[in-house]
Length: 447
Image (cartoon, rainbow, N blue to C red; front, top):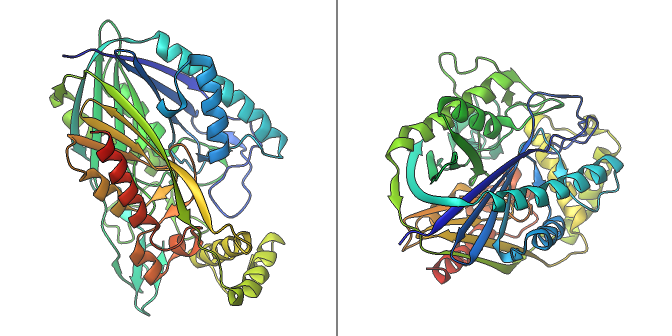
């Protein structure tokens, strides 16, 4: 028996100019807007159970801020905090949201977004209408690439640069699957949930943009009538848009940025169109299923931290002090290697005195026999592949930066081999495998 209802609300959350755009290890203050940032809210109900699922065009939201937001949403709607799923698409041309910022613009922006979230939740619940759900898996080829490479000298580099002659081979592979949920509603627009993993870091510069997730939504909604689209970025910690061996016109509309990464707004538009096309491949042929119940669950786990050794501390302080003083030029590194060394030093300094472990939440929302599982950081592809294979589900949709923003979750081999993600991660080796174990346990408990 199907007793599903679905509601939707969209709001503009474009910040003011001058706000800090997070994502690089240098200050970038917004000086313009390429496209508006959006908040999309999906309300679902079956019987007495209601859940609220949000997707925001922001870089991330930390755990403490999520707790404050969830509490406010619960107060506004009566929906329990365990049934609130807040995802950030991780655009690198948008702000990080935190309620305890010392910067006036960020404080003002947080207060406004908090109110918008509560209003969107109320309006999405008021919009609930009988719905049927369908699901399918499309494909978005040749826009996501492994960004970790083995080099001729035996080292491992993240983003070594386009056509770098010292590249031997990529480490790992990508997941080009596009998970699609379609909610057809009585007397209202359909709602489409898209789940695909890739770093939204294709624009660069100081202008506000939701990157390819926003342009994907725009492309899809222009192509298909009477539909609203939501994007949930998947596992993307070791994947980005850079094709280091491009052919033909692949580098059209790109430039080589300060960190040897090719970027460009035209390429962002291209990526959005490719993902939208992956959705359109299957939109008309989804498998419709009855939904007679919705379940939600949140669990708290504790993960060991990546504390430095006493021997590493003096050099970490030296590098960190130079970076904070604006003297990166005095360090013998450039491009992504400079970013890696600076990030590693910053991690060591922050963790010099602990803590020995961090708590974080894993969140899952099951809609019939399909389930969304939120990871509060940037998981490697191997985590997503393992969770998608959890037994007993028709479809598993993992999303990054959900109910938290805790940093990178690299696989064990990344710690063994090195590279930006593992060297900068504040979590000890084994974090990815632990998340797979705990995530699978969470999914098993909900069947």
